[in-house]
Length: 553
Image 1 (cartoon, rainbow, N blue to C red):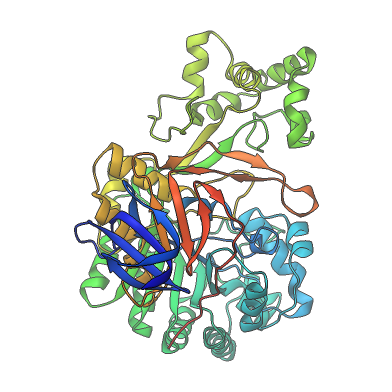
Image 2 (tube, rainbow, N blue to C red):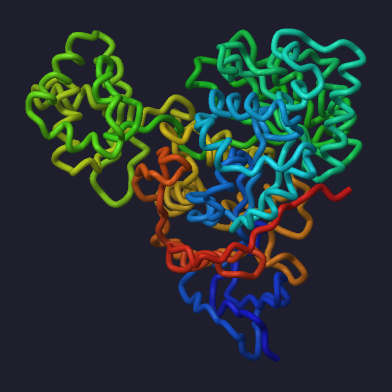
């Protein structure tokens, strides 16, 4: 018997969490038809000897809503074995949208997620108003990987209330309308609704985005409406000592009100000096509530190199130079001296240097350094000012030196404890967002290289289960997340001995020449999406076989 594609002689890690076993996987069209020992031949065959064969990974927190318009390969997520992404998180989405509100939504996405408004307005067709029409438009963009979407609270509130949505809470009639639009968005295909409690998520004039201070009555009404249509509620709580317990309680109240799934962005709280508040989630789960958290499995934060905006205080002259031209600029001795003098004149330079950690000069970035192993300490050892050390390293590496400035998930013991909770799913890579300063989208490769291979704190089967079947359960994806006959053929073939992230780098591939950070991967022999090979030996094939995944009630 022949098949469209057979993956031969791999170690099958099927996503269910059980022991891996040797075998083959056969695919016809977009579907897995056999797992185990497969006879016959494939019109295409992949030799997986010595490699793990897994389901494609699922990232539950991205902002690829805009990037799909000009980078349908959706890098770097698709480079790291991710076959399905959830967009529209943090209450910001591009639909529903009245034509008059397009600029507001684009500008809000820029200020919240650092995606240039000009790129958003010029790089997307804006040929929609309802959420369903938006998904139809994304489908026409032919993404390389599967995309599911959330309808954002801020977009829906503005749609219903206009300018009042920013500073005022809705009246009873408006709450009913917000819930009605949210439910319709789910009927149109959104997998749920996203809301935000972080005051730092702002519109351009500095006010917090619509819905940030929503009261329980509004959130519970939306939860009832959304969950009655099979959708989930996504939350971004504020990890602040005065607010986090209130925000986690609101998450539980949504789950109780609607009787459905709730997802939230969870981080270890030690970084913020907060005793673990997640007993609140455990309490609601013990009462039968279906609540999940997603967290990045390493420290997350900003990137500082010659092309980013994370530079020393007083370096306005360097910031004003186009990122791709800065290396040549600092080769000038006089200009470089002026930068060092400017940094020395600002006391905050030392504080910045204490937060910057060099990612090393190997092929693989080092995210596990202690807080004490920082740029300030390096400079003291060399008898230099930190700005001088930073500039010298940029010159010596032809601009390839990279520093990391983490600001959450900084305690690895606490991360391990968090990830081991049955309701936590690795993710939170924020792919597509904060594109000039943050690149955490390589988290799957870090999870496999650090936690599984190097530290041996997770076995391979457990790690794969959490990235696949557990994540699929959050999205109610019954046809993905495991390797079994009848499931969609989203599959990775991975050299676990070699898998890892590569160093972040800046590329100028956004519309109008705007820059973004990306991060290559190593160790991915193949990634399949709906039966098509989209990555082979760490390189994209150009195939774009992703689909828009819509709510199924």
